[in-house]
Amino acid sequence: MTQVLDAPGRRVAGRRPLRAGPVSGVLRPRPLLVLLGGLVVLLACVLLDIGLGEYQLSPGQVLVTLFGGGDYADHYVVFGLRMPRALTAVLVGAALGLSGAITQAVARNPLASPDMLGITSGAGAAAVAVIVFGGTAGALGGFAEAVGLPMIALAGGLVAGLAIYGLAYRGGVDSYRIVLVGVGVTALAGNAIYWLLTVGDVNDAGRAMVWLTGSLNARGWDHVVPTAIALAVLLPLTLLGAHALGALQFDDDTVRGLGLRRDLARGLLLLAAVVLASIATAAAGPVQFVALAAPQIALRLSRSARPPLVSSLVFGGALVVAADLLSRTAFGAAEMPVGIVTAILGAPYLIYLLIRRYREDRA
Image 1 (cartoon, one colour):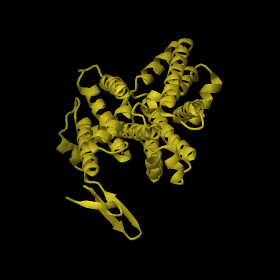
Image 2 (cartoon, rainbow, N blue to C red):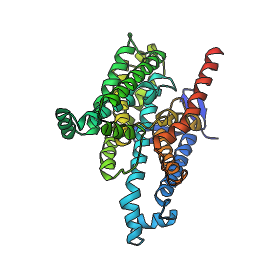
Image 3 (cartoon, rainbow, N blue to C red):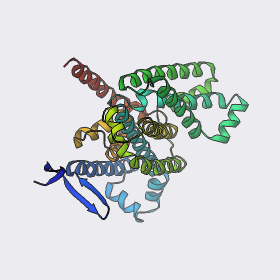
Image 4 (spheres, rainbow, N blue to C red):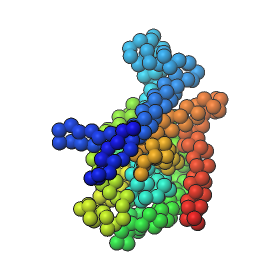
């Protein structure tokens, strides 16, 4: 059994110390195995998602085509039709998983995901406003065309995030208070969306309703590129803040004793979570429960003290790709939006979390 010193005279089982010059750390085998397992599941889901459909390709044929083999039809199906959709699913799920891991760790509450806190609802309300009024109100339509739907969804998510943080702040952010305020913001944004749908043009309202279901239909490289750029920028910044995320698991006195500026660290981490959730919502619409479930799956499998960031990202991608695969293949010719599939799968998990939380509070 591998042992490592974590304090003078004390050893911790199952950890291996690593040191490279001035940089040192601890290798924990179980979280690493969970991460590798998640990557294997994600790769398998992507290969199946690309290969299955009216034009069937085996996982081996998909791999051969990706590395330059295959005929013209294989190339068209893989690179022209299915790969952009699969990559969009991976990136949307990864952004939601990472965002959920941050919000749950900062709030120290498994229910504090972006969709439960109203961040995705705020982004959705802003996007629906543009979709509904963009075709009938010239000024708003021109503004939307110039700025773009992702930036408007990002602005809506930021407004919702600032409102939640500001209303929940009372010399600090309590986990119950931030969830309660988030539920209120979710309800407010939901009512705003219903109002927008009733006052808008019927055709624009129809387009907005389709977008609100959370769909990956007709997603192309123009959805992949901006989402990939946002994730490539935010993932390293979030990993740099992982040490602050670990310190925030302690009580406020301990955090201050560690020399961490608590409110600044919380604010920056929540800002990263808001941007990630808003970008994902702009790419595919509201995809429910992924940000709630992916960090908890990674947490329970790796047995970590808080949701692991990279594993949450990987499991989020795998969940959305698996849901997309089900939505395309399990309902015959009637393709179901991926957001409905994730909601069907995630609702029982939310009930389980609520019951578990209730029992913990009574114990």
